[in-house]
Amino acid sequence: MADVDFDLDQEVADLLRRGDQRYTTGRRRLVAALQAGEGPLTITQILEEDASLAQSSVYRNLTILEEVGAVTRIVTRDDFARYELAEHLTEHHHHLICTTCGDVADFSLTSATETSLDRALRRAAEEAGFAAEAHRLDLLGVCADCRAA
Image (cartoon, helix red, strand yellow):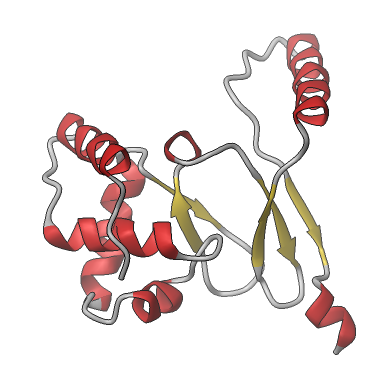
């Protein structure tokens, strides 16, 4: 298991403190597993990343980390939600979600494309009288593995 970087560790600790929660060893290990993972992880993948974590505590701690804004849950069409560190703790990105197997992969856009997208989304929000704070973009489709099968 990889160590959590100091700045990330401090930010998660601050979020938990503001939510009247402690940054326990189990939560540190969970954050480290999410940081080490390749994209959003299922509970099973988190447990594979760090076998010392107990499944029941992973569920409980993911709920708390999500409540304080340190973790984002991604729900797909399969039976397994995926979890990742919140974007404000990592970097802005989007998701490719396979509607066949439920796999979720991260992708990023160029700065120019992201700026154009921001402008278009801001206009759409303003026209609807909506005050947008951020955006998430999920592309739904079939991954290469499922297409090949």
